Structures are given as structure tokens and as C-alpha cells.
Length: 288
Image (cartoon, rainbow, N blue to C red; front, top):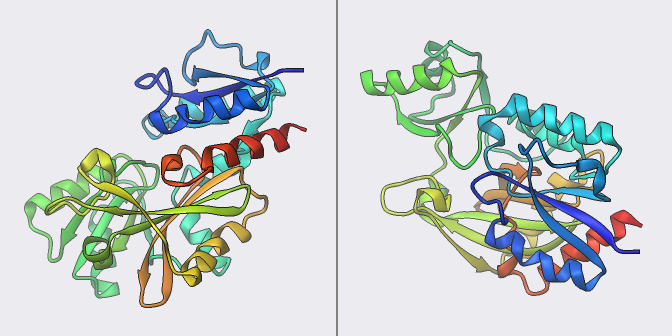
């Protein structure tokens, strides 16, 4: 029996992002009919699908209440959602980094400042001895409202901090020079198994590596020790995700986690030989 699969996307990519489009022929080869479906489209009957694969829902952080309500509705319909709703809910708030640290994953040190407590950002920087900090919303994606700020803060910096913290709880981290100098690794895992790696580099004086901010992505063969350390972020989870992207930097021989992407990461399938087929087969296994 042919299975009907929804690849959940967002309004600006109703036909899927290019990376996700590579999945369509691979799913078809396995007898699965895949449809692009905009997550916020009220006309979509999610119960009509055998599974919903969350993919390029790249506005979820701007509509977090709606997104969570949508996730609840699909889950209540009985249609399987991958990654699982429980993983997605946990991963939607970047305080998951604190949770992973407690589980023994080496992460960039992260502090949380409560909403409208902008003055606490400077207190954190002074207490930690950080000369340059990165501030970002606890719920964000694609470098949204993310800034690198040198201490002591001038009036412009204080205004930026006030804007970010007024919107909700805010993460404060030390600026990581390795990103500007060496780039940021992205390790793609499919069904818990390492698939391929890419390196993301920022453009010019920008520190954000996302392509939305001018960054570049290229394939890379990483040291095995870094892959093994990156895999630890997957191993400590309560369940194995269908897909995951583990982002971080190399500091000497150590891997330091920046982000664990379990909701809507670009998996850079075009940079991994056979990666789209590997993901399609993993979806098939989950549905059996």
C-alpha cells in the first residue's frame, strides 16, 4: 500500500526548500507519495497522512504559540510526527543547552537572562570575565536577533540588548573566535548515524554563518574524534531522532556544541553522497 507523507514547510517555501526537494524522488522510489504542506495552512487535513515530517518550517520561532498549537493538533490527530513532538517542544527553547550540559555534553557556556532584565547581561559579562558576548532570544532561529557585543556596552549596545530582552528570555554566551577564524561544523545524523559534515563560514565582518547573512557552506571531512564527540549530543537524548544536525566548533581536539538542531535544520543533503536516500529509508523504517 502506498503511503502518503507530508513534508511540513512554511509559507515562503510552499514547494519545499531545495534541500528537501531532493527527498521527493527517493521517497517515491520506496512507494511513498510525499506532499509539501504549509504547517500554518488551516485547510490541510493532517489526519489524511500516514506521517508528517517536519522540515522547512523556518518561521516557527516568529509564531511559536501557533506552532506549538499546530504540533498539538497533529499529534492529537494520531498522525505520527517526525521528529517527535516531545523532542521538538524541548528543542524549541535554547535552554536545552543547559540540559545537555547537565547530561555531560561539552557546550559553549550559556547563561539565561530573564525577560526585560537587560542590565543583567552586563552583570553576566562582568562576572564571567567575557570581553565580548553574544546575545540571542531563547526562542530563535537563523541568527534572528542575534548580536555580538563588546563590553563595556555603549548606548547603542544597551539599546540592542533592551530590544532583545524585551521580547523574552535571552541567552548570553561568550563570543567564540573559532567561528570567525575556522568556521562552524555541521554534522548531519540520520536515525542516530553520522551521515556527512559541512563547514559554515561567515562573510566579511559578519560573525553569523547562516546563508541568510551571507555565509557559505561547503562539504568537509572532519576528524573522527570530532564526529564521535558530536554524536554524544545524540546519544544522551531520551530517543533517537529521525534527523539531527549537530553544530559546533573545534577547540584543539575538542568539539564544543553550539546548537543541536532537531526541528527544521537544513540537512545539506546535497553534500552527502546518498544522504537523501538514507533519510528516505529511515522514514520508511519508522513507518513499518
